[in-house]
Length: 193
Ligand SMILES: CC(C)(COP(=O)(O)OP(=O)(O)OC[C@H]1O[C@@H](n2cnc3c(N)ncnc32)[C@H](O)[C@@H]1OP(=O)(O)O)[C@@H](O)C(=O)NCCC(=O)NCCS
Image 1 (cartoon, rainbow, N blue to C red):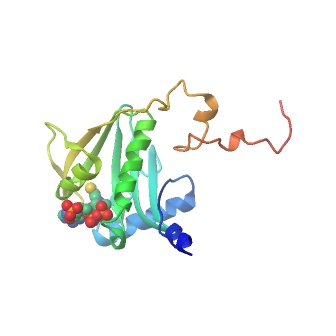
Image 2 (image 1 turned 120 degrees about the horizontal axis):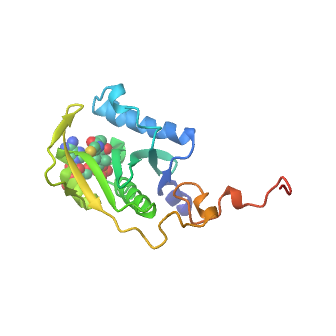
Image 3 (image 1 turned 60 degrees about the horizontal axis):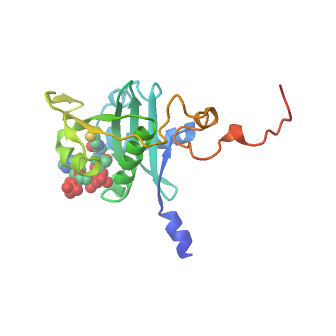
């Protein structure tokens, strides 16, 4: 019973790999940005969700409580749209999300993460993600908030994904590179060429 309860409240962060999980992400963003922050729908869902982006979803037990988007560029990753539902703030969820995002970017070989963050949340970002404000970059404004640019250096681990990563590892699902993927299971369809 105690174990079941603990499992029910476990904080887990998932890389979004299917449409149903994407719906959970969009629900959280709709609640937080469109609902709570009164962001117009077309500004929140800006055309960058399905092109070049990875979404993370944090759940407590089975309940989706938070999300973040990461966009991948040639020499930097950009973290965006972090949101935790009001009922689940000041807990472990946002720290778990940020940690996963930074680890994912480092594992993919990125050495630099950028962010455009609401100025009022600078302290939060400095504490949670150890970021610094970018030198010589002006503050700016959109969707009714003031923003500053932040950055953070990353140290890719020894097993960072690269062009020399073994082929079957590279074929595994994004972020799940340490266990055999579906293509490594015994083929049920018999021998082929
Ligand atoms: C930012 C966010 C993800 C942080 O979630 P969290 O870590 O679970 O915890 P909290 O909301 O309690 O906030 C963490 C810190 O940010 C501060 N903060 C949160 N909202 C704030 C606001 N509107 N104005 C000023 N500070 C705020 C809190 O005071 C807290 O600071 P403290 O730890 O020094 O006391 C969450 O507040 C959120 O989803 N906000 C709405 C979406 C948003 O603004 N995203 C950020 C875009 S850059």
